Length: 252
Image (cartoon, rainbow, N blue to C red; front, side, top):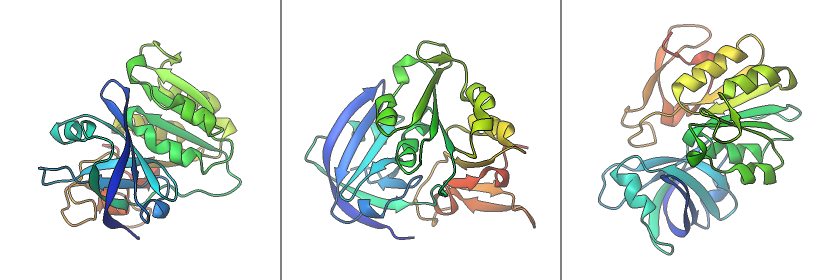
């Protein structure tokens, strides 16, 4: 795994929705190393621990990071000005594994939606299902359409798109796809795997608290079940955040 900590220049900071911000940061070497499903660890001035943010998109010189304000660190990030310099450790983690010739269904829930955009750009004609609590939190819909994805929007209360859950759409469309890639809260991932089990392969990106981002602090350890052998504790920042769903303990 190739990663490094380098200074990036903030070239864009926009608010997309209630408490959700959209960064573009530039560096001459790091962005080109990124692959879909990986993340970046952002150093926040005055804070000891960095903030792990999924990579929403990347090209040769820039990373796009979409994050939600959840505490003091991300609040400070949201207030940074264009032109400021920020130190970022990236790209980190094990991302999604893609195969040519497959039709993928990409599912994102809430702040698990952003990493699916970079992933969608690597797939051919993907079906993308996005789920949000309500219309005030809906993001990135035009970006997915511009990436050539077939897009289905769901909200819990029906205030935008289709009322219901991402699993409602998945259950109806599962016969059209070869594999599911998903990112979001654990209850959603568990429900998605229940639909996929015995039908199609499923990869899930776990949302865990992370400290160092490189496997040194053990904060993000989670239980994993290999196909053969005994269960063990896996470091999400290092061995994940993407896992084959059958290897994850969903509170079973």
